[in-house]
Image (cartoon, rainbow, N blue to C red):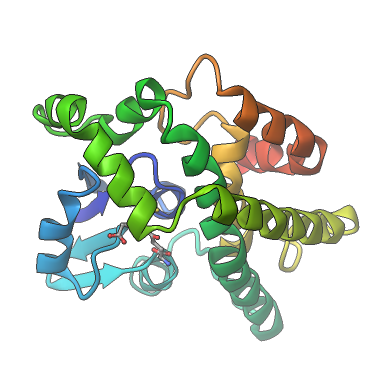
Length: 241
Ligand SMILES: N[C@@H](CCC(=O)N[C@@H](CS)C(=O)NCC(=O)O)C(=O)O
């Protein structure tokens, strides 16, 4: 059975969770604790990041490569369009949101959430190891400063990321004014990627986390600001997740 190594909070991991569910592929999820994950992921693959899947003797890292692998080897409910031009558009959109949106949503959200351990610790430890909560109760400050340092999360980068995130949200919104989907006439990996990477801002049902009852005001204000332009994320989640 396929094993998915992941963080429950990670929106890149959500891409893969969604792809596996959409394709109705039985799989086992292994939730890793940020920080400690490196030992396990670098043993499996080239880089430290999640998601990583293991399918027999195949190990695949990076959400886009994983979706390509799944479509090739488990072809039911394909997410990659078969028509050449539509496929090209889907892959271009996915690459665009992976590189120009996901990283910025993450920076904006973490910059705010890392100052709210009561919210973020349950995200990090959701369905994880028994010792995760205990470790983070005492080691959260250390993890927080490591994440800020290694992922370059600070006020300046968050403001820069906010602008880039806004550009990407606008670009997608403009496209969806005259199209139902990002590539062609059907749901594809492009829509899945864009919606999953925006999910932390929209908190749709189906993501697999218990979203907090109250969101920090600064993050809630950002979510409210983009609410209308992101209504499509909820629609896509309702229809396809
Ligand atoms: N391009 C990668 C991005 C994955 C990524 O950034 N993963 C983050 C979690 S959201 C991560 O694992 N960070 C910790 C690390 O790189 O060690 C993908 O699509 O899978």
